[in-house]
Length: 246
Image 1: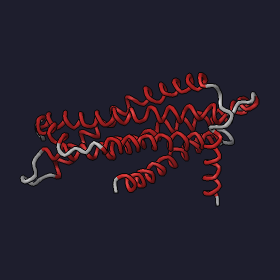
Image 2: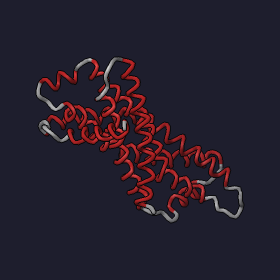
Image 3: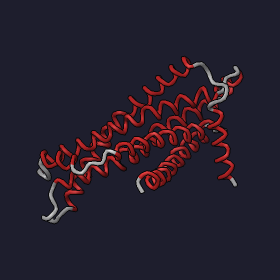
Image 4: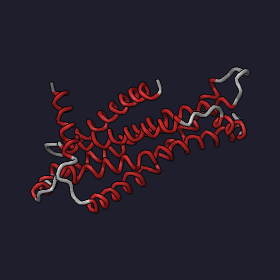
């Protein structure tokens, strides 16, 4: 019963985002601030992780392709499919949940226990719309861009390692990236990134907004936000793949 109670409260929380909204200019400034915090603040981590993921994927793919009958450009083809379909949107979403989602939950949880949210509501402002909606919009704008950066860095990391170690030559790697390329996979990755960004930002904000107690409860809410976001990402990943690729 607790699960259904939380799910129902979550959807009521989402409905409250669009009630008694502030002016467009107010949201414009708030969204820009959140975009800077989310996008620029996560850029270094995304570049670092995705580059090493691409490099490791190239080495491990080459290690498993031991047959001389398999051309070496297949290494790049496998890395491309892994990167575009899963590594860039899904693995980065889990990292996004750990960094950005935990920050959102902790920030709102701290505002709740220090009664800052209560002060906003006393002024007649819809606190959910004012505090949470800019975070969700900014996440849905910035995370697809981070996924694009992650995809590029992952493929570039594979290119660098493959060229440096002699696993695959640069012309073979470029040919493998272009071989039998289905451009719908890019659209699929961007669709997943928008859905994941919404899930992470909304679930994390929900957990932080309804925090009660003290510093210990803020930590618990932050942990729950990341855990629930990761579960939602994995479930959404399966259903989107079943819906769009089956």
